[in-house]
Image 1 (spheres, chains in turn brown, yellow):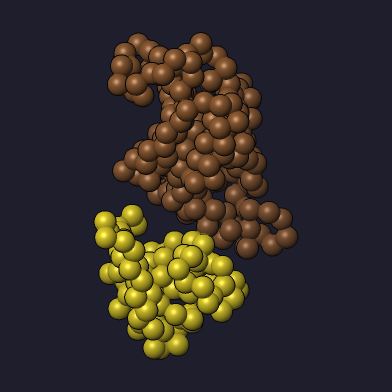
Image 2 (tube, one colour):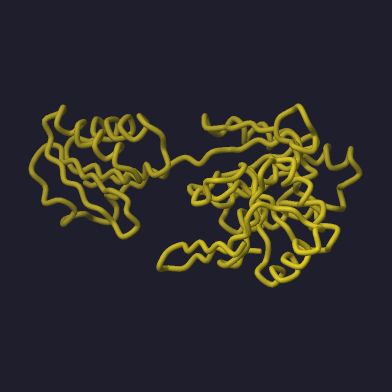
Length: 203
Length: 88
């Protein structure tokens, strides 16, 4: 069998841990890990060497490295893979939590401009997070008159969930002003926060 | 503002960037405050991204002393790469 682990965008040592786990889980076959940087690629080949396993490295059109590590009997790498044997483990996207329309405290005018700059950066940087949560004054960023509305719309088009706290919109009298994403309650906000280890809180 | 060719204004300081943003809004020019692109090094951390269509108006404001900035660039992104051009 061949097991595919998509470890693009994951920080060291996560690709190595996932790959080691993948190898341990199979009796024999190939574990193919896709990573987006050279350091991760080198660490994976070191892992294979340390486990005395054969490996090969390929580079795809996007510059990602595919490290295939063979366990057990010599399989012809990838040639005999059957559709049902392919396991794809997707890399886990981050959940970004925005709790204010200002980034940091100190000066509100600076905070506002930094937040705009941050949201632009999120929209320009891959991999995208899987969700962005907005609560308290953070919801001022998801309304129709938001200075970052276009960035959030383009993130949503890329599949990023944009979730605003309904209680908060209501509190600021902005419930009819939502410009992007969905309104949600505390249950789903908490559920999203707990859905990953990879959360980043900004505000 | 997702066009692949746009203008970038850079500044001596963050205060200048904030001031310029409000001056541009007053002049009804669409702005986007962004981190200064990495290929421009000699400037403060914040820059303002503008539409190419507004460049002439921005030059006019600059010449009249109604707008201050350090440099004006255009950036064009295409499949062949990213091209930075300094206009002012």
